[in-house]
Image 1 (cartoon, rainbow, N blue to C red):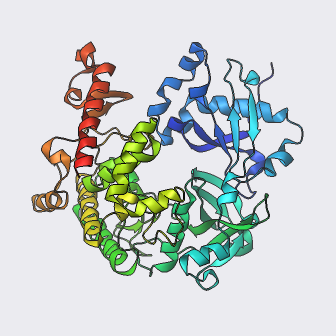
Image 2: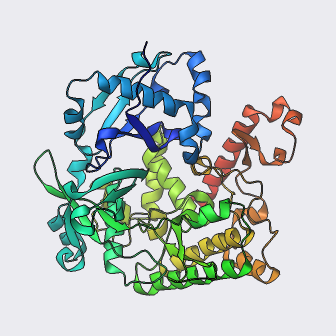
Length: 504
């Protein structure tokens, strides 16, 4: 067979969730449709030879940053290029798809030409959009006074950087060469609307991302509603604090102190002039920008981003936040109905306001959730949120002064997705000045890691191993310390942790 001419590229994705943002060449320069390619591996039978050649058994441990090097990525480019070339009027059909639809890869085949693929149009996201009037009614904000509306059709896709972040041009507003960031989510839209509310309401600060330049609206293909689908922010190409800490390049104490002090000023501003707390403090939510427009000393300044207030991954959150999130997860997502009922009762006894919310459905309006939708954080009083905020500060300070991208104390999907494979774990100190160690200890008082009661499993490459074996050569790890041992350790730890959460 003649070689396949690639007409697609994969910009980003979540390998562990089998989701890939693949873009056909003709879609560049067009409005971003946020169409994702889904490969439901958990629902298909795959030839073992293909599992090996495409390294499918390693997808869960693959970093987003390694996506271009994964065998499945090249396979999808070839399969999509061949499939789309055989579809009549494919460009017209693709561009007329509802926003945030899917392309589903039904089967994988040794010959990618035989891979079965289909378009899956969906109006689910468009139906959830709030109109300008609905947003204003739920937030008491006047959008016309705070931002400029821009129609989605004016945006031109340059590159999908992340599932919710797209690099675009808006020639009609900014000229043909200016780049902007289009922030738009396709799941849990209430968090995006809360972020928009926060950013439009908060006074400006030099170390906090500015208010949106434009709010993007799009007419729904089903029903004709003009909905808010996202917003535009300035593009900062210098990378994140996580990238800097992950690079291995030496960082001066002066730079670390400047980052730390600037971030603390930003958080005080959030407390006094914004939503009151910031729930997602971690290095990849801090961008780096030149400290001054003409800075010659090489310093970079931090820029705090992401005000969805979802709450962070568990390794960054204090126990009192984790406990509520764990039990709420059991109450709403456990596979067993008996488990859901049991923990729903626990949650409603502890938080009576949940009864009315859950009776009317899982989603509250913005007016009903003035502090956001993170139950773990909003269940705390003001003083409790400040204590939880200080806990996050302590862990971030540890990362900055130890020059590490993660506290590495709770293994999660994020650990693999962000490519974090560091040996050192919080709270071990190696580089932090002595006078700051006690500060970090006081900030993170109550963290289970201080009592060696943290998550008992760590990472070695693409393997999960008991923490006690991380310093042991892999050839010396016996069968009793393999997958069964890891599973047993995890189950025992979760039993104890859920009991601790119930006691709390």
